[in-house]
Amino acid sequence: MSDKAGPSHQDNLDGDPSAHGNAVAEAITTALSWLTVLPFKGASVFDRITGRRAIAALPVAGLVPAAGAVLITAGLFATSSSRTPTLYDVTPILGGALIMVAAQMLTRAMHLDGLADVADALGSYKPPEGAREVLRDPSTGPMGVGSIVLTMLTTTTAFAVIVASVLSHWSAGQMWPGVVVLCLPFVASRTAATTACWRGFPPFSNSGFGSLTAGTQSTVTVACWWTLLLAVSGGLIGLVGVAACALSFGVTLLLTRHCVKRFGGVNGDVFGAIIEITCAVCAVILAIGF
Image (cartoon, rainbow, N blue to C red):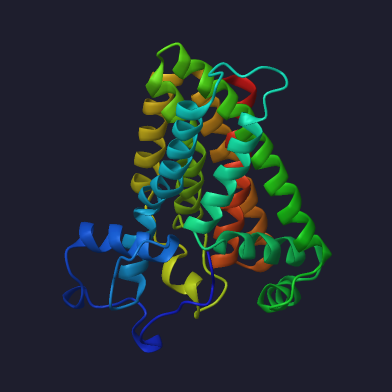
């Protein structure tokens, strides 16, 4: 999630409700416009009203890469000669790689930029002002590159294992648990970004994407999304789904609090890093337990 976007009018950051359209429509279309390649127009006015609405709908945007994962796995299931993978079957490995490629293409790979920037800033061990300067630096250092490589390697490997399990479940006629497992990392990671915009986590700047979005989400909004994820995942895939959601939530709180301490607040780069890291965490738990 880039921090290059900013308010339409710096002197009226809180916004005017009369300048906005239907709340639900604006929330969903703006979230899809910001976080995916889908051609939605989104909001025409950018202030904290826009930010609050769009961030509340981020989990909906997670359904786009999730749909890509389901379609890729379904294609492999339809074309594979053996729908129950063996030790030497490369189909799940191919599936994991394709899912990651599709996810990055569908989201413009924007979250990787945030992941790299946050890794470089945290790795600098500078005080908040210096760390924020590292975040703003357009170049990527060795820690940033390493964080991208290691996170993508972890997530791709986890999805390869997930694809193998899903193919086996689908062969046994268990369709919906497989769909939920493929979708959960993408939706949970966007819910994590919504959580990072909770009112207790302030922006570190009055400009940029973070000024529109940080600190805009109520406890009710955050709780509703996690409750929905827990209910769906727990109901369809059992305790492993609950564990994946719970650990993703815990990692989100720890990482966001650490960034607030190190940077003096959060910004769009922090949200992008949280999306990539929690996606990896959630996928690993599902790979182990599903």
